[in-house]
Amino acid sequence: MKTQTLTPPRGDSATTGPLLSVENLCVELMTASGIVRAVDGVSFEIGRGETVTIIGESGSGKSTTAMGLLKLLPRDLAVVSGDVSITGVDVLADRRAIRKVRGRTVALIPQDPMTALSPVLTVGSQLCEAILVAGRAGSKAEARDRAEELLRKVHIRDPEAQLRKFPHQLSGGMLQRVLIAAALAGEPDLLIADEPTSALDVTVQAGILDLLLEIQEANGTGILMITHDIGVARLVSDRIHVMKNGRFVESGDAVDVVENPRETYTQHLLDSVPRLGAWDESAAPKEG
Amino acid sequence: MSEPFLAVEGLTLDYSTKAGPFRAVDDVSFSVDKGRTLAIVGESGCGKSSVAKCIMRLVAPTAGRISLDGTDLAGLKEAQLRPLRHRFQMVFQDPYGSLDPHLSAQEIVAEPMKTQGLRSKAERSKEVARLFDAVGLPSTSLERRAHEFSGGQRQRIGIARALASKPDLLVCDEATSALDVSVQAQVLRLLQDIQQETGITYVFISHNLGVVQEISDSIVVMRRGEIVESGATADVLQTPRTDYARTLRRAALDPSAMTGIKPRHIVSALAASA
Image (cartoon, rainbow over all chains, first blue to last red; front, side, top):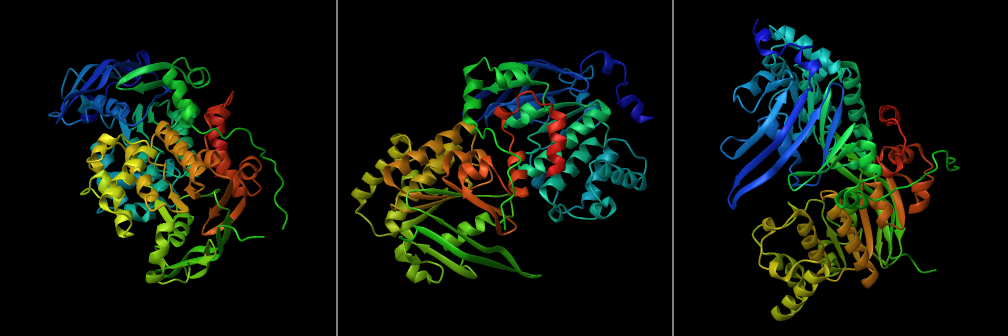
């Protein structure tokens, strides 16, 4: 019964309007040296099945934007203003509204898989907790079954055995898959991925990006990607917003922004990435 | 023919674990000429940082030679190493954890000169000022402590400290990995300028092929403690010859090489080949 009232009706506001609509979002942080406007009037939208990426360097406000619209910033240190609606639910006007959508309609994939999970609890108990909190299981046994199913969905082999393990027994790539599984626990319409591959090896990164796009393809999930990596942004995004000093300095179609940047800052960012250029994929293996 | 400036031969390092010895570095050999840069690339756990620790003699290798300008460092005891240590220095990965928070920036940079017994106090501060200038740190920041600097500035302090004893060899372990791309570009340029000026030799450890292409003359690709491929930088990056080097090359997302691609397609192909 409770899920009825807590979950906004799917296929209603969700299909007619954007999944996420952000209008003139401002985040002011109280610091020792005064008030800092970390996010300074940004606006963007994400529709069903779309990936929108905010790219920027450290301190640009990209993660603060994500945390601000999820209302995950400490209330006494951050003032969030503007309009944010997630599947039609205005989460800034009503203080309690975010709880109706967080975990169920929108879920966060945190940055550092090595520290995001508690080291003293098993992967299984943490994943089951996420499932129970999201109201997707009635009993512990049911949650356990659902946890196995989720791990299978993120392509983790032998899920039953993995659930019994502690985080330190899994690799970084595996842990990131567990965190994605936890984010999927509430069957969200929108995923917010904060640097989901930055802590991982490049060969592992590809697998995680592939998984996110697979989930998107299967469920029409919208993705807000936060990254500093232009290569990642170019690969997965429909639209890119380039952020600097709390503002979007350039916004547009992913291909346009990377191939024909209009702003000098975007050009500067692109120029800073060392170019690898062309290579011969068919070079003959070395003899002997 | 004279011997290369740094020659590593048959380097092997075992770590003892509960389950018995673990071979982190397995019969690794390479050499670098004076004034050149060799890059060691590979993913986490491949043994690249262990090679760095052996060269720096922070650990004693299980077997093999590390010949620096004709002296084999591998077998030397700490007392024998100490007079040589000023010749090889290291820049660490983490600009936040590798600087003593209690010391001011100038104390950090002066420390190696002090331990070497070099120079009077006045000479030391003159040299610190010169190093600050060389790495592009403002002279007004001499008294500040590590936490008052940005990540890029801290890495400059780390570089200044490493250069303070006038080394011939600098081992940089993921020295730019924690930095923003624009700051990374500045630090790479700084390292290149210093090399041109002083003829210093670099061993540059990185997982980032783009960075490695920018700075190195030759490359060693490591996997599971072994060298799987090596050669001139341009050769290894343009015509990688082993499956693993190709996988790494493919996985390096180069935005400039993505014209007209279908993202979902390329990501799946990448994931499948990794």
